[in-house]
Length: 272
Image 1 (tube, rainbow, N blue to C red):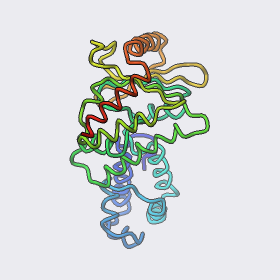
Image 2: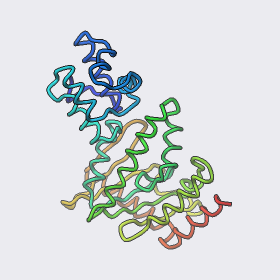
Image 3: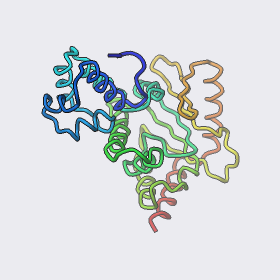
Image 4: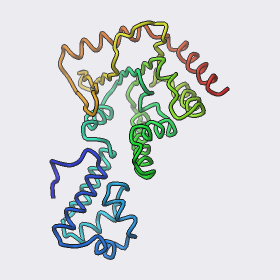
């Protein structure tokens, strides 16, 4: 069993591969695990193929069947902690949970903490068209659970700058967009500020999305992405340059109240 390295990017796939490896090592068949665990064959098959999240009880049954001293139970805890997200995204989640302030700029889609389930579903179905409904539902659930960081007694201060393109790109249809944009406006409050960078502002200070996380110790960390990779930097030069870029984006964006009015206007256009 491998607990610290070599796991697939998909946590459910990771668990399924370990079940397959354990069956091979034991010289057993999937039907033997079905009979021992008491779970039905379709469920066990989906777990083996990374298409369903195993229950804590099933993980305990695996440990008993394979005599693995809690390995599968611990693996399930690790999967739950990382929420089924790819390994390269885990640093982002850790920074998000620990930040005192989050400053985000997005020029493609609405930032994750502000997404509705329907909007997130449309994104996942577009990005992963071959995945099962169960796997998509698990992704949506993982994304919605990230909101818990904003529901703490002392949540971080979230400042999101959304390029107008994020409002105009029709994700999931007009009804989904109307709901999504109204949700953004309703989310604004003491701990959440949203600004819109309109098309008329011209060329943006950044052509790529990025996030700045202020930490409790006073430091700031930059997070950015390329295709399939996440990049974390605490370099003073990178952070300082990104903070200056964010300041320029914020200055070019509409003021907060005008941004809310703008988002509401676009939402109403979708609702017609």
